[in-house]
Length: 372
Image 1: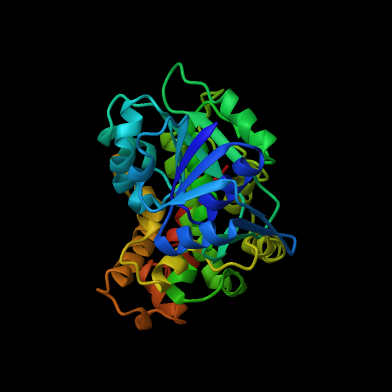
Image 2: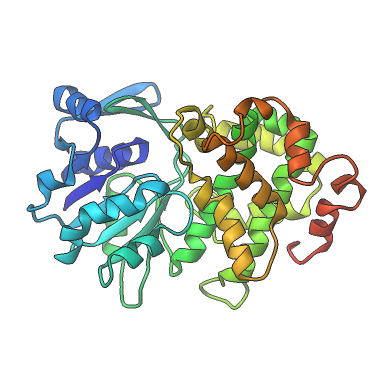
């Protein structure tokens, strides 16, 4: 297979590395320091303390460098906020019938590409492995748990052969009938200990250690579950629900968060969820600390808010998290106003003193329709 990977970050590099080791022809599009590093030393992945490099890859700075080549697949592994720009770059390939596989966090990427590139083949993917960039041309696989999920986005499409390709390269792979169910299930994993730690400039472990912040995480998560259950039916039944992803039983995870008491859940999260992140700061914190001026919170907590509004529902905690974080991202709110100040964030989310503990938002969540 001849694959073009647009977005040579952590995920794009890991996927490209494994495809190349399996004998596929891989071209990665990245920034100049990345291209120079790959050309000089090859593409490396650190796993279990050992680095494996491959020189069987091509790194370029522009899609135009390979636009005339006969690719079999284009993978978009860019951040969600760069999807439209990436779609425009690969349009000539897509018009020639090359399928586009969208592998990124959040929801809405497939719809964005479909709107910009009408009548092209779009496939959907999620990855549940924790990967981080060590330096240009070298990434670290932080956890071995997880894999890749694949789904068609239109009737008549099949991802079976592509799934086999990823299986052979060493990825645990699963195929889904509904890409919406798959992507929303991944969103549920992504929003846990992400926006709040980013706003407060604390680690997920520190966030879980604070009982008040843990309640906030539960409230935001259960709002997202409510929206998903109203929006996305299970592929094989009429009952809306999340689906299990490689390495993660999302239905059980969602049931536990929305049904079990915090005193029971917090120790489990501290022992299981935090190590599963591989010691990484949350993705939203990474973008914020780099001062990019944009954030994937738009397609995570922000997506929960947008779809809730379309359904005539409310998601007040996600709305507040989205508003505060985007305010900081756009420099409309000084980050110092929230750094290390959970009381301020709780108040902004309507979960301050006299709110949720006295039958406010959290009481409505527990007694409402989102409990399993």
